[in-house]
Each structure stands twice: as C-alpha cells, then as structure tokens.
Image (tube, rainbow, N blue to C red; front, side, top):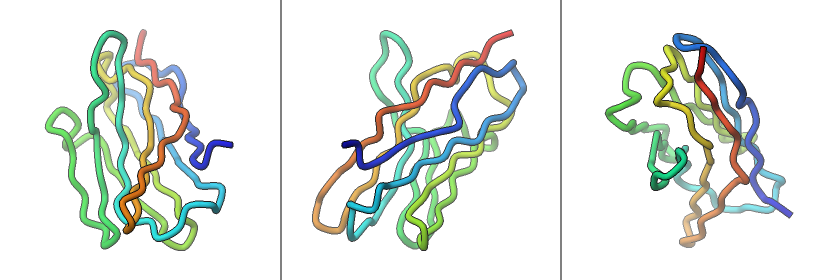
Length: 116
C-alpha cells in the first residue's frame, strides 16, 4: 500500500500548464515539510519545490517564477502548479512528506512530458 498518491501528470506542449496533486491515504501522522522532486531519464532525482508546515516555500532556480507549490493542512494534500512548461521539465515527478519524527514517505510518481 502506497501512502502517497500523485496525480495530474500528462503530456503538454511547451508553454502549457499542469497541476500536480499529492494526497495521503491517512496513515501518515505529524507531517511537517512536503516536497516535490523530479527525475529525468539518466539523471539523479532533484528537488523541485518544498514547503514547510508554516507555508514557507523554496524552489529550484530552474523553476522559479513558473512553478507554485501550495498545501492544504486540513486535508494533508499538496499541489504543484506548473506554468510555462519547457521540454527540460520532462520527468517523473514525486511528492515527499516528512514527519516531525524523522519519517520520510514517497509517492509512486507521475509522468510529466513536455513536447510538441
């Protein structure tokens, strides 16, 4: 059973937008920081965006001004609004939840492909 499930990936043309979402099955407690990572073929997984429990966000330089991360603490969900997408944004995107007790949980990933 996967505790986190991402959704919203797909195929989009350059310049287009996608909105990724990540939801938990309710089995993760004391969630603190949340993050979105991505991994392109042949590359290491990299941090795209992160948000603290207080709502402070941090973005990779490559996505600043184009991506926006938000969270709903009541529902323990997190979103990633991706605008002005570029071919180099193509990757599998993963969400990650950290807990106050040092736990770390990953989703199974969702494919984002930016191509004309």
